[in-house]
Image (cartoon, rainbow, N blue to C red):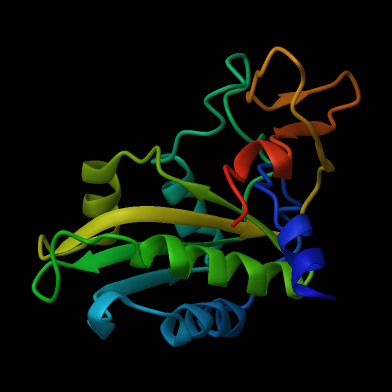
Length: 192
């Protein structure tokens, strides 16, 4: 796959084949991609918790909010939930506030997951006190993001942004997830 293929296939998947497990080794390999990625001032303040345990996954799932634009959808049903999670933390004793490291790292992880035939979703809607308590995360670590991972159980289609400019993703009657994207000519302000 080319990098364009990987980026195009790297969508926010929110429904997974929950019966297909992810091995801890796979999660470690994905975190290693983040470790090798760029870091502002090379401070490397990110830390991770990886989980592929079904019982812990169920508890982590309860701390997350899913798909803000899909108002009538409470999130993946049992059987469609992630098989693994990577919780991204900032070690505030190293660098604070954090600027862009977590975005770079999350993209590296998700591109690696895509290459492995997995899908994922970056989740920022987190019950942080609940997750901190559940995973016994010391106060020194700020919870930044949760990456939900698994074998995708849905189709995601990129389509042009309509003339009304609505950027909200949506699902059709067949459950296909549609993601409107602005055109390249609409986002490049000028060529010099």
